[in-house]
Amino acid sequence: MKTFALLLLFVGFATFAKADQLAYLSKEDAERAAEFIRTQKTLYLFCGCCDGDTPVKISPVSVEVVYTNYEDYYEVIVTYKENGQEKQAALDLAYTWFKKKRDMLTVGSAMNLEHDICNPFPKGKARK
Image (cartoon, rainbow, N blue to C red):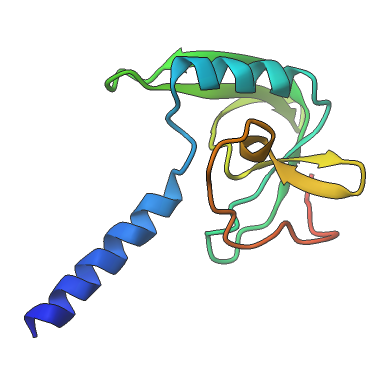
């Protein structure tokens, strides 16, 4: 019974760990990612590790690097317009996608940061 309880605990932690793979970053990585994102006209937010997630297409208006108030970690915040209103989102680079030729890649992969996409970007599924 102890083994089963430990297994459940481990699976729970493993699932939680995949939820925020590349959300908290070193300042250097966050700044590199922000510079890269500023060159993109369109991004897609899609969590391949989340059940039933639908990709969302956004057009960044501005990008900034913000200190998280936790240890030495920073995050990338994007401002975008949706239905005429400006919104902000803290990005997880493992689940922030861009189009490169005919492929969909994560910003994390463009930054050569190790992560698991869990499931590839679904073709023809992005909503605006």
